[in-house]
Image (cartoon, rainbow, N blue to C red; front, side, top):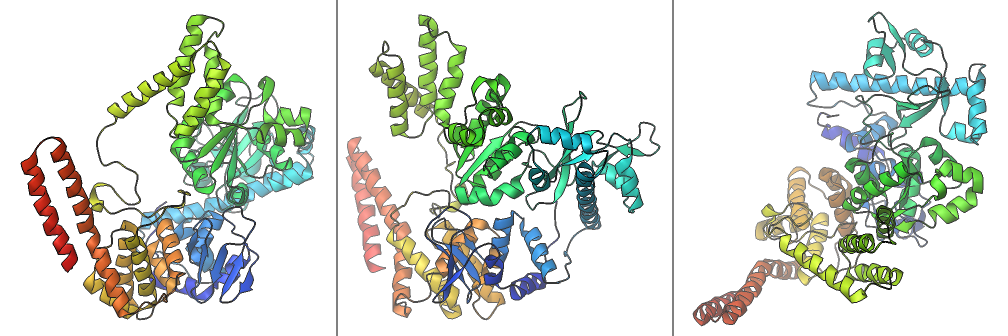
Length: 616
């Protein structure tokens, strides 16, 4: 859904009325340490507190996972809301009236329809849930759930309900409460009769599983047939509330646990997930009766590093698991696959072997994606036959070649050689090198390297290291100089004006240049520094995290006018230093090619550049 522009006064009021310590304190136990409040980060698992809240600046920052921002960003992250949704939630809590500037009449109407549908779905969920536990109609459904091992506590946790067999039970209730039935039909809650005269319930004689958005609001249903009716599961159609390609069942409950554990479990079925929840697996989600999508993979990657695929053990389930691996890995996740024996699904396994064995021997024993791929493809070969065995080994080596790490490739190659002692490890390694060499030759030249902002337009600037890149890097001197200057600029308007005049956008790190541009814009509008208000202008997770970590550096570090000017000169020199390095490489190439005249010309250019560097 598109929103109109949020008025500045609404954002101002939200930041003014909400103290970040109070808001964060609802989710994190904070203790005072000097000027800071400290606690365990809610976004990743840790034993020693590295999560700080600064009341004076109204920001938070985690030194472990680099999460950071103001109160708006915290609510977005902790509750999985968009920027407008977080503003709306905080505004409603503080009784701040909300109007979206610039929204068209059509957009306003759609927002009203969405709000009405959310109320209707919430009512329907409560209505179905009441029926399953409190009426004669729901007795059979309650018995079915109990027989499947779903306790009253689980029924309440997941708000499981029952849609009676009558044709218009829900229709009558919605009409009685004044809901527009035509809108209810467009929203997928009820169906129009074939003759167009009136409406009937979409779900009848089915166990009802409410599907919620990331904020926990009911946006759709999955109805499981009680008898032999087909389809076995019937989902709500897509609507302005519900898009199955971007929705994961149980995301609202699993998200906090996923982030703390940095692990997510994907199931195929609702009952599998619910039974696993009782086993203590509280970081599980399920797809909506559809294959995993790129959008699903992206959502999961934003919330956890490791994804465990726990699909059914039958052929269809294992094929779906195999297909899901590249999607998850392309999104940047580390993938493992839980192996279920004898074609069982998680529900059946738990029923036969119990909760502890499921957690220990299925989830805990999940295998790396490459091991799973090798096990999966070998089913297609008759390994007792020489021809098929060789074809399997060739296929396996080709799979192993896709691993980015030489150490991983070596590990799986040695494992393969030990499984097939009649095949030469050296021959496999030679095949692997041939595949890698050919792959390198086939790579197109271009500027498609993944960096933070863009490729062609970034003028060679380096990207700020993102949160997903956990490996520590020794940063160049100019990088630290830029951060220190930005830290002072965030605390001092006059320094910012001086840097704007002397340096402008000539920062060498693209993210630093963007932060500086926003600072120039901020001080053009506001007289006094205010970290929280400045961060609110950014509206980008990576920029907000970076700005929070920089502002936490403070304005000290012996930074006077002379030091700042020295840093500016150091930053300015970087493009010229890089040009000298490039010229030196060109000279070496020219000498190797025997073009001594060209090498001499380049040497003269290098001397001129080095003289400029000395004088600047």
